[in-house]
Structures are given as C-alpha cells and as structure tokens.
Amino acid sequence: MKKDRFLSQLEELSTKFNDTKGNGVTRFSWSHTAALAQSWLEKEFSRMGISLTADGAGNLHAFYKGKTNLPRVIIGSHLDTVRNGAKYDGTFGLVAALETLRSFREEGFIPNRNIEFIAFAEEEGANFGTTCLGSKLITGIVNPEDLNKIKNSTATAWDMLEDYGLEPKNLAGQQIDPQSVHAYLETHVEQERRLFKNNYKLGVVKAISAMRSYKITYRGESVFAATPLKDRKDPVISFIECHMEIQKAIASGAFPENTRFTVGQISCNPGTPIMVPSECIFTIDIRNLEISNLPAISEAMKTIITKVAEKNGIGVEITPLSRSGGVKMSESIQNAYKNAAKELGFEYFEMNCGTALDAASMGTIVPSGLLLVVNQVDPETGEKYALAEDLYNGALVYEKAVRQLVNE
Figure 1 (cartoon, helix red, strand yellow):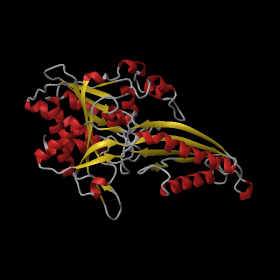
Figure 2: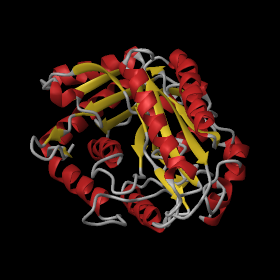
Figure 3: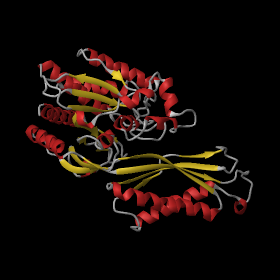
Figure 4: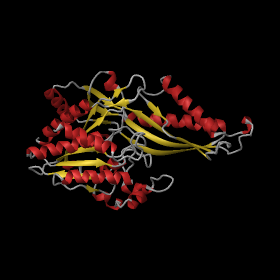
C-alpha cells in the first residue's frame, strides 16, 4: 500500500465533497454532494478497470475477481456523514478498502475468493433518523416496503430514493445471500475515547452494542408568553423533567450496567420567541451491549416519558426510529486482525464498540469484523483528530487481514 497515495486520497474524499466547508463535513446520502463523491469513486475504480454500480438504496458496489466462486469477502464502510461531522468518519474505511484493492491490482495479486467493495448509504441516518439504513435494507433487517413508512417532514424514503434516480423496487432481489459471503471486514476511526484513554492505537472489536432510537412528541398548548406560568401546559417543561428523571434512574443503578441515553435532536413548534410551544419534539438514543437488555430498558424509559406527560396534563407520542447492533464479531476475523497487527509490529486493544456501524447490520447475517483506529483528543478543547501515521498503520493491518481471508 502506497502511503502518500493513501493519505492523499483520504484527504481528498474526506474534504472535497462537503456542504459545510470550514465547519465539519456534511455529506448526506442521496444529495448532490453525495453524487459528486460517487463520481469520484467511479473514477478511481475505473482506473483499475472495475465498474461501480448502485443498488436500489444507493449503496455502491464494485467487484474484484478471484480464482474461484467460493463465498466472497466483502469490504467497505459508509460514504455519508452527519451534519458538521468528523473528517474521516466513514471515508477512512472506504479509502482503506479502495487502496487495498488497488494494491492487490498493482502487484498482480489474484485472491482465492472474489472481493466485493461496498460504500454504504445512510449509515448516519441524517435524512430520516434511521441509522445504517443502506446496510439494513440489503441484509433484510428493514423490508424495502417499509421505505414508504420511513419519512421526514418533506418526503418518504421511497420517494427520496426515486427522486434521486434510484429504484427501490429492485431491493428485494438485491439483498445479500448469507451463504454467498465468507466474511465482511470494516475499519473505522473510533468515535469513543477508549483507545485514547487506554493508550492504544488499534482496537479489535469483540462486540457492537445494541441500540434503539425513538422520536418523542410532547403536546401541550401554545399560548402567548404573557400567560402566567401556572396557566400553561408547556411541553418543554415535560421534556426537562423527563430528561432529568431518566438520568437520575441511570445514575441510581435502575438500568443495566453501561446503559447509554442520549437526546440528539430537540425542536419546538411553533418556533416563535414570544409563544409557549404547542409541541416539544426530541429524539432519544438508547444503547447497551446486550441486545436482550434493550426491550426492558426501552419500556422503562417509555414509562418515565409517559408518566411525566400524565403528571403535567399533556399529550405524548412515542415513535420508533431505528434499531441495530447487539452482535458479536467473528472470532476468525478478530484473529485475522490480531495476526496482522502482530506481524506488522503493532499492539492492539480488545474492546467492545458502542457505535452502531454497518458491521452491526452485516454481523446479523454474515461473519463480520471491525477494526478501530484511535482518535487523539486535544486536552484543552476536547476536539478529536486522527493522526496520519495511525490511519496509515490501521490501513496496513486492514489490508493484511483482508489478504488472509480472501486466500482461505
């Protein structure tokens, strides 16, 4: 693998196709910016004589021919970002996979197994709040017909895909047959701080935490700001109480160990400074390593949410948004990462991952493995950033692990 080319291409894909330059990276799935990034990938694959095609969800696929028709190895990551996202989120794994294939091509290496590259769409869930939607659709976790039920304020997911020029009607025939896949390998920059805190550069993931997300709507009464506090039915007050009650319950040990709870979005209607809102809408993200814990955790949190609404005399609606994770990574792929790291002289940390990446979806139907690379943390600002040397070394370990598995 050529270091300068890898780092140069990583920089280009990570920064060039961005709707918020100077303020993080914003590249939503099925956007004009995503189309430009796809064109970039198409150009890079065409230089290897490989075509890149999109399925009905906008996942991008390329195939590298091996010697046999044994079950193939899939490599890749996601192309999209959240708004104002981290620089190398997703793109590191894509460029590592791209450069792995390019290195194989340049040395004339023909693997025993075929290799499929996938750049997944909508991993972040920025359009509809449903994470890993591209990988969930082709693994069968989400039924293609459900795209008509997944919607934001302007469109359904089905309509957005069609408006982008895709054909979601073809997705049923494009789902992955588990019998045809030997392994899925992904590498990603760590989004937590466990590697940094434990002074490791590489993490071999043993399991990915389970997660559930919901949209909560508290409905009160919109009145003018001059209305006395005792005469209001303010849904924002209920949101504040709800948040505090859940945090107290977690701190008291009422939930299983390592339960995570996050409010990622909040909005009010109408959004007018001189009016008490009639609605307070927010999302909650719930995580725990054991997927078996999620139903009870979710129900307990729903109980708190509902009781707060009843206490304050307002309405409440709880809408499921997304569910994923709670999967163990393949031991054989973990060993491939460990062996590669040892051969290259790098230490690694065995860990669980709290982030629901596409490996979580893929891991439900095929043997999957996830390699994480450390983010440094600025002690003054808390800002996370990855070092070029760490990224390149991670890519080397990834390439060597892929090489092992495609030759099995």
